Each structure stands twice: as C-alpha cells, then as structure tokens.
Image (cartoon, rainbow, N blue to C red):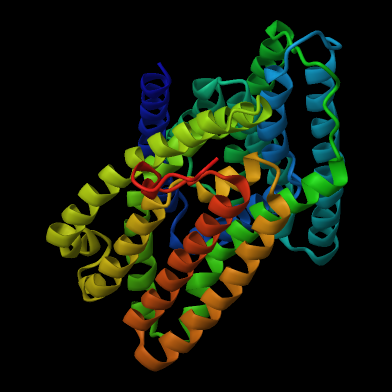
Length: 429
C-alpha cells in the first residue's frame, strides 16, 4: 500500500536524520574540545569552505539523477541495458572534472600564499561532492539506508569518536589542519565503500523504457544547480545580513532560535528524501493522481508533527534556548516566529520537490531567487528598525511568501496541490 510504504520509509529516513543531527552536534563539540577554541575557528572555516565549494562542484547532477533515474525505470518496453550506467557515469565524470579543477585552484592558491586553510579545504571538495551525489543516486534507486547511513551516521559517528579520543587525551592534541585531514580521510573511506554499493546496485537493476531518455545535460543541470546553491546561500545569508544590525549576543541568540525551529522541518525533510524519486517516477508514468496522492500523504505527515513541535516550543522554548546559553532566552519571541514559519513550510508540503521532480526547475529558480532577495531585504530593514524580532519576522515572511507563490504555481500549471489544502480543495485535473 502506498501510504504504509511511504510512512515506513519516511520513518527510517527521519530516524537517520534525527540521529545524524545529534551526531553532528556531538562531533563538533568533541572536535572543539580536542583541538581547542582557537584551532576550532580555523577548522570551522575549512569545513564551511570545503563543503560549500564541494556542493557547487556537483553541477546540479544530484537532483538531475534523482529525477531521471526513476523516470528511466518507469517506462515500459525494452531499452539498452547501459542506459542507467551511462547516466551515472556521465554525472560522475562531470563532478570529477569540476571538483578536481576547483580543488587544484584552491590548493594552488593556498600553496603560493601559505594559506593552510585553503589547502586543507581543497581536499574536502571532491569527497563532499561525491557524498552528496551518491546519496541522491541511491535515493533514486530506493536505497534509503545505503544513501544516508555512510555520511549521516558513519562519518559523523567517526568524527565524534575521534574527538572523544582526543578530548580524553587518548590520542595527541592536534592542530586544526591535522584534525581536518583526519575527518576528510574518514569521509573518503566511506565514500569509496558507498561507491561500491552504487555500482553493485546499478548492475542488479534492469532499466526498461520505450525509448532512451533524452537528457539536456547543460540546460537541466544548470537550473537544478542554481536551485541547490540558492538554498545553500540562503541558509547562511539570513544570519549574515542581520548581523550588522544586532549585537554579537543577539546574533548568537538569533542563530540558536533559527536552528532550534528548523527541527520542526525534519518530518518534511525525511518525507521528501523518500518521496522525491517516487514523484518523479509517477510523473514519468503520466499518473498525476498518484503524484497528488503522494503530496497529500507528505503534507499531512509533515504538518501533524510540526504542529506538535510548535506546542512543545510554546511551552519549552525558553528552556531549549538556555541550553545554548542562559542569555539566549531573550530570543523566545524570535523562536516562536521561526517555529510558525516552519509549520507553514510543513503545511504547504513538498512544493519545491514537486516542481523539481516534474521538470519545472526554470520557473522554480526564478521564484526562489526573487523570494530570497525580497526576504533578505526584509530581514535587513526589519533588523535595522526592530532588532532581533524584526529580523525573525523578515525571514519568516520569505518562507511563507515563497511557499504561497510556489503552491499557486503548482495548482495552476501542474494540476497538483502539494499542500494540506488538497484534502479539502483538490485541483481539477
């Protein structure tokens, strides 16, 4: 049954994501205690720089394969057996050349300027790019565990163990560079093992379609890449834009409130991890009714936990903020605003995923970038005029506005309502 399959797979993804969030937090805490606060600052820059450029080096290929693989496997008839292998091979090579070039440029800059941070960050670019890509390939093949476990659990768990050993003085205290090379090497190991799983899975799959799937590599991947980078930039720029108008303590409280409220989005994220390739496959089959049914299940499955989370935050929000620092409880109003925005995001369901999985990445990117520019302007002006709570309202305005516009576009142009409203106000298709 579609409903039970979706919920069971989403429960697995949610469990992995929750464990990953805990391990990620623990790993950063233990690394900080191992190498000390001064070195940790350099480590954080290396990690941010290497992962951001690594994401850019994927060239939109992860989302492209996530959309195309289910469509390749959904068509009826006989096809060349190497269709799936050819798709994955081309995407791997594209990422390799882009990532290798970016690594060489960054490493060369670090070598000639004596910048150790740049040299170390260069080593993370390709492993991080392939970690992102291989997870999407395996999600397209409905291998959720193999897609998420290597990076989200094994890698973060390995980093945590390394930090614990260092904090307990069971291994020598390290510099930021030494610690960073160690975690990069660990990621490389897990990515090699995951690549073997990708190859084994592809060899066991039989692709069938009436005709070879035509992929416009540059056009499709470019807009998918723009969407990926736009989302990545938005996560960082909201805090950056508001910082000049807030004190250092307010900026920290703003960041803590924003991160805490994002926990309400975990059920939607987990559902999207599972359902995105299912949506692509249903769309490839021409089954709009199945696409609509998937969206209904995702929206209700995300909205109910988000509503429960909002209640928890209402009663325990101040306590959660004090876990970061006692002074952060002053951001309780901002936390309420962010939590409400996360609930809105859950209620509107897989808006972005629906557009991307149905080949509508061009209008999606246009809506996304326009909404983000307006949101960042609202954050800056509101932070300037009203401080911390103003910045939170500006960010929430961007989240709500983007969802409303995409929701309307999907109803009018795709004939599918991704939101919870589809239960009472279905589209006429």
